[in-house]
Length: 373
Image (cartoon, rainbow, N blue to C red; front, side, top):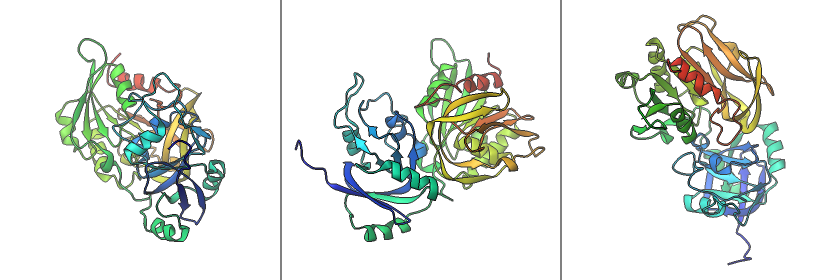
């Protein structure tokens, strides 16, 4: 009924921090790692990004939902976040593209949310204490009772989540425009975003998207011009099946480009190590310096793990590898360049959905690496 007070909801962190607010979206209880995103817009792309699988996402911008949702802005086939945390949820959607409201979108997808909480306080706390396990519930409103269940929830470290969000079967994504495609690319789906596929297709690539556990032999049998390693959720270290496949592809000198989790997996394949960041990078305004071009890019991010720059091999099994990009906020590695095999990667999201377009040139570099013009 109009004007009816929404039910109460509880956000509880594993360190005992409790925030009470209003139920928003579906009713129920959701567990995951609580993180924050600093983007001013793009909430639908965030909600549907598979890299947020098993995470409770808090948006730092206070007002969410004002322009509604639509079928075109989704980055996957469903809402991927475990739960959604906002300061204020818009009661109406006002945009010519909108086909529904954020509230109804979450409710229909089964995603539990909470509004009317102090997201500024929450963000400051996570920046100090780090991302951690948490729960959002509209059912269990007793903090002590919910705390026991939060502590039983799995942690993000050691979690192999790429297989949980990957496509179960291969599928094709055609190149854009008329005429035959210029290049054939096999894209590993570790949690791929649709706008990555759109950007590759816009550069004349016909794509065969394959499951995360696809052996390298099956990819080589397709005789692709190149291989793309997608973004995805979880800890890269336990995704050993992908690391083994990438090593084989590098040995065969197949042109390879990785983004986000794909970047971390390439790092592991060439002999580097990965580690968990305190609270990660999630937003659309991270300054990154391209060490090769000596230029600064404003970039879109979503990651909680990173490649250790001190572990990048100068002369490993696959030759020399260098750090191609670095985060100007905290010095975190943001890119790799292999000099003796045709491979490179970046930690951030050049497809930028949402976000700036400073780094779209990377798709052109991939095309050039494959021999395209």
